[in-house]
Image (cartoon, rainbow, N blue to C red; front, side):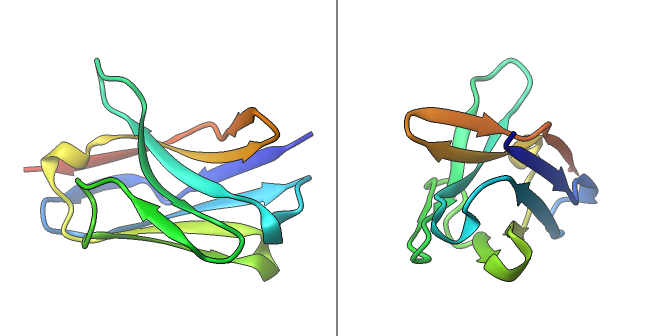
Length: 115
C-alpha cells in the first residue's frame, strides 16, 4: 500500500522559511511524479508544485521564485523549500503521488504564517 508521510510544517512569521518533507514507500520513487498541494480554510485544494522523475518542475504562479521542489531518490523523499512565506501561504500542505489515474495523498501538514 502506498504511503506518503509529510513532516516539517509549523508556525512561522511572514518572511520566514520552512522545509516540508514527504517520505514515500511502496512506490518506484525514482520515476514517480510527485507533487505538493495545499488547502486553505474554505478554499479548494490547489497545486503548489510538481516534479518528475527527470527533475522537471512546475510551480503555481503564486509561489514561483519563493518555493523550490526537489527530491532525493536515495531516500524516496520529496521536499518543498518555502522561502519568503506570506500570510496567504497558510494552509494544510499535502504530498501527492499520481499514478495510472489514481491520486495518492499524505495526511497533510499544517503551515501557519503569522503576519
